[in-house]
Length: 280
Image 1 (cartoon, helix red, strand yellow):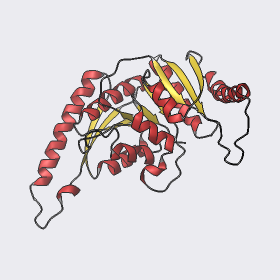
Image 2: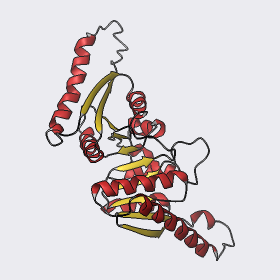
Image 3: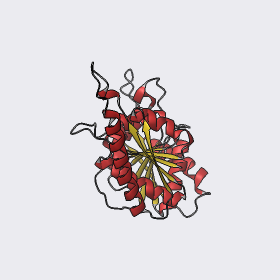
Image 4: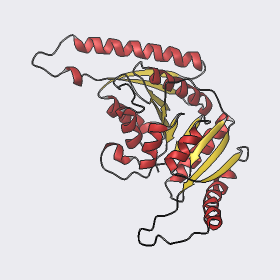
């Protein structure tokens, strides 16, 4: 099942369209979830006793609109809705326990002008173990390409496998980007590098990763790109002409977004297309 969180915002509506499309391609049911969060309104000596009914009614309205949008986009997809009490991040994290994929908008109604990524989407991407797709609200053209970040760590393997599957389902090409930078030797500034040798070694990293999966996806056209740049810069640039950007996560922290690695956090903030975070 695919789970999509909604709150009535533009990114939320874009997330519904995205989730309905993925549900159609994967032949999975779609569950649209709205979190009824009373906590901001329970502060004070005299809480409004009528407020729960108002919040529940608003949630039902949001769900009806989201369900109508999903059915308009993909009439054959099985759709259900749930109005769940709790904070959005916790509700979506709990819903994700039996999900194939979770889809969220990049910034909900509680966001502030200029913020590219809201706290809910960051929290969900950092805590959920199934793939999490973060979708922006701006309309985009279809480019026919999925981009995946790759390195020599085991964390990138599930992300690359997910990217291959997405490219296959979409009939898209897959661009595998490995960004690398020369190490800085503070105590040996005179150290010299054979750039051709370094470049060949970096290209081999991608080749080894791709060859292990390509045999299962013979119809996916793969473009390998090893570039000398910071990974966030390289992936953000590649996202300009992508329908989806897929990254793994090296985060090992204990709190909040620290469960996301620095590259996945940076990409979520700056990429111009939907981003899928696939945790190992």
